[in-house]
Length: 104
Length: 233
Image 1 (cartoon, rainbow over the protein chains, first blue to last red):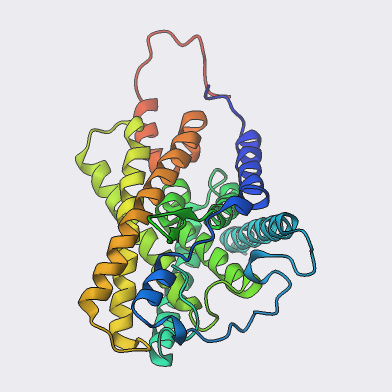
Image 2 (tube, each protein chain N blue to C red):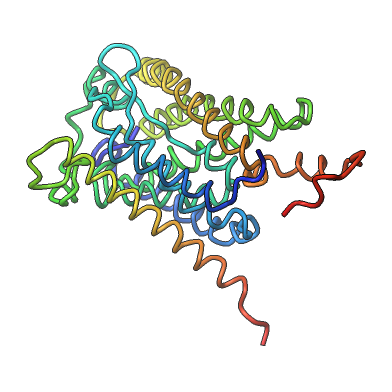
């Protein structure tokens, strides 16, 4: 049981992330989240101002100009997973490389 | 709980931005000690998983939803400082690419959903580890409890920020009641997802769970009667 290689664990997590973001996300609840709901109930929802990135091709977790909602959400999710994984890994590389600099 | 632009005034947003910057900067230094050959490859994956899980909003009560924040989950898997880096990447990407969470509120969101859930989740986890029997099977439960508590604490901190620099003047008691009430429910989801995720990795590779390391070191020191299985590959 304890012999699952790191590679397979990594693939498992990556697969889980891609399936969640690429497929399951379409079925996520469309209701306002906790803070949004409270802001509506307490009357400060209107304080929200326009988002600077509202014209991003992935704004609102939906790929722009993709007609099919399921596909638009899935594409946005997969791109997000790849970008986040890439940035996270890159950050680790930078943080660790500084640690391994030769003494002289 | 992504805070949009406009909910908090500029001075408050600048203050949370400064807090976030200092903590992320500290994390960049401190994470070096956590990141060895086992945790390092996990960081990008955990960040990706937290991002994906945050897309899965689950219903809590009528007409309201919530999603994982992931601080306790990431802290137990890869260590608290690395977790801060992980979640900061997630919130930055959500903000800039997906227009989720205000740009001026990025510091606020990193502070509330990143720093707070990591700190509370990790502290509760460590306290429970200290007072409960040192058993590997308890790790997912301890992580789940930490995760559960981290969400209402984060929501209460939002109320605190709103009291200082909120857009409107509203009775803080009722805001706190509403925020903590709904986030206790979201916290249950946070706890369950964290319990399941930590449990899954612990079942196959306990050595990849940062929060379980102390227990493993102890276990490996036990004298085994007959070592037919030999040394780990």
